[in-house]
Length: 103
Image (cartoon, rainbow, N blue to C red; front, side, top):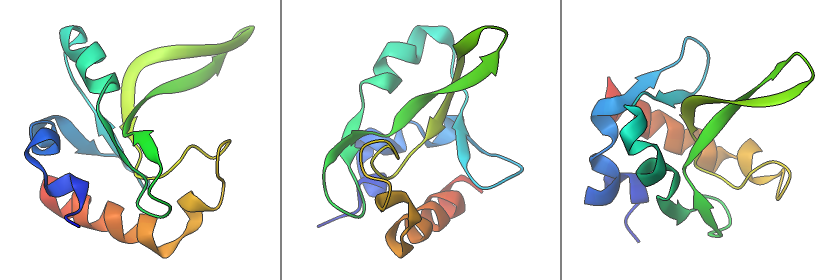
């Protein structure tokens, strides 16, 4: 099976990806593309479950959690769904490969 980050559907987003100063990748897009980015569904690199790879960043400001306009790239299940997926070697290797594509 070909890794989903090598598909043409994902490669359209590579020019908008930026490596964060800490580990991770952020998607910087105009607001008109938000819905399209949020709808891109791929599979978890560890367990194969369907996931949305672009997720909105949330901040704790004031009285609760607010959603910002920024998206981040995820290659595994959300931690509240399956915490083990994000801690494995498969996730680390996937991020390394995608960071090389962006650089």
